[in-house]
Image (cartoon, rainbow, N blue to C red; front, side, top):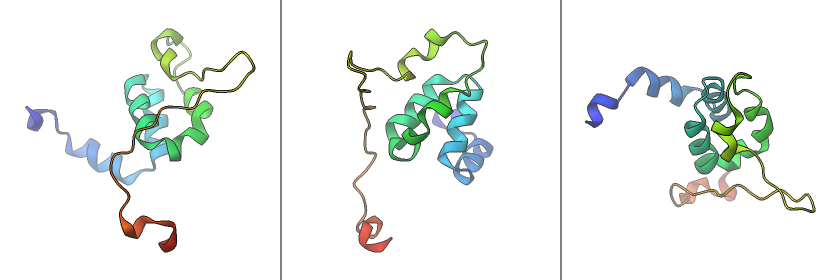
Length: 99
């Protein structure tokens, strides 16, 4: 089953472009589930571009389809942070001491 779903050309292209470029592409295609996954697992890179990414959804797309991606705020105007999930522990060489 996994072999049937694997698309080498998609994976190769996905790995060679930036996270922002991939997420914008997903938004332009109307793929709100993919954008949600990208925000959840790569929010540190993508959330500074939250609104510009959302502006790439097709104008003809029903906003209720991607409602879960829209920022939500308190009555006082404070935006709720996006709930992120870390894929893995950071490797020792990825720490700030080595950048």
